[in-house]
Image (cartoon, rainbow, N blue to C red):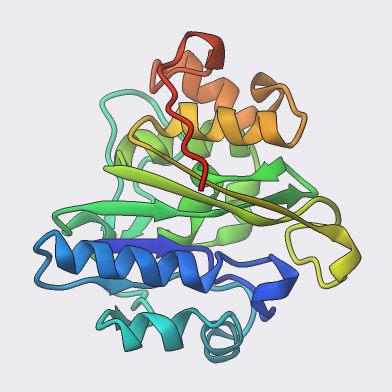
Length: 232
């Protein structure tokens, strides 16, 4: 199993720039209880990898639960291929993300200065090698196509503590609010749409959700979705 959280930033869990470590730890436990023989965790970080892994709290709790936490190797990639014309054609994607039996995408919901929001499709940037900056051109199309290529088996969106402003890096606790919510589903587009709604955004105003709908990758119509709400 590959669990792919957001570990991109040298921030503490309270600052809500990375996936909550307790969400990651709970998923590791559940994977092993479900029969997983191995659970891998990695991200291509934006800040220094060692500091991101340590200060996010994810490395410590995941290893305590028995997961294999590592930094991806830029040489160990597979080039993306599509049966349609795509700006992501030939993009290097880490082999560990493609050769796992189960891919669980675990982003944190937060504000993003370029895309409006970072949710699960945006989180897939962390499985890509290559020139990350170039992905920001026509990013909605690229992220939708990347989602189509990866086809995550499960999406788990951490909306427990949410960065409402000054994302994706954050840093000011005044920008963080408690939502105490986790969104889980097999439809990536629906999960991202539900999360966008929580942030008072029209899902189709987020470029990658709009492009994913055009590709028929999932459903953005929350009113027509079968959604189960569990309160604890």
